[in-house]
Length: 386
Image (cartoon, rainbow, N blue to C red; front, side, top):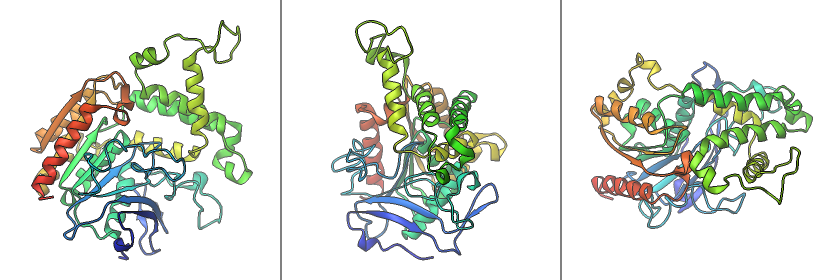
């Protein structure tokens, strides 16, 4: 296998890696992606024995820029509070890697990519993908980087699903794993919210059966509604009440259907800004991958069986974090993961964090989460002599 030149990346690197035609990505559906491209970012440097690599797995609408300054927006990376000098994941000690998932729209192969068979964007010709497919692609990138074992794999929300998949599929390559605000499978409620979003996109006349790029349009209205519906699930009722309550946008009511309430204006803004940075078809494919996720399904429905190799092959260390007000992936779902890890004999630490910020708490200022992750990573570093 061809390897990336890590010496050329310095302390901050990345780009897009295109795999040779003889290295296709074989998907769970039976399809293959040839000429796979993965956009990735790295921070820090790999040490001489390759023992300090940390893989960051991103959530649904995020990307490969968790730290530093985002090159497109100029804003801080989405996990800058956790990744950086003196922080739990520190480029002075760790070689940090984050890649855009397959099916994404930030540089990795996805439905907006050019289909080599047609010379046009894939659109709905792109094969359906799974969380396991995303992880399989990440493992190919880790191979290309010449890394045998990861010190840690860390992710929240959909990123936490990827972490679990890594532990199930590649335990021999992991020393530790951090799962934040996640679940071992999607609930009926979560699938229902995703379906509302997908139907909003597909009902937009500009969706054009997924071929909107060829027509020079985008299903902006449908994608905006999908984002608005999803964003509600990322918050909590106390957070919405604290931030907006029933406050009006202006003096008096409009007696119409403008955004009278501040919360309406906020959701409209979330939807409008989202369409400028995300591809509608990617939203369809990634939400479907999350809906298909059920880690226990392949092992007789017993989640502990999925983690047995993580105990027997490598004795992977786990840390699981949840938030009290998260109703998208509530504490009960995270405890289910911890119970399965314990039943499998794995070493698992668990912290439920008091917060009224809902699911989005994993991306916001939460000192208890920062302290828990710092403590866990410090112990992992000590065990590995870093």
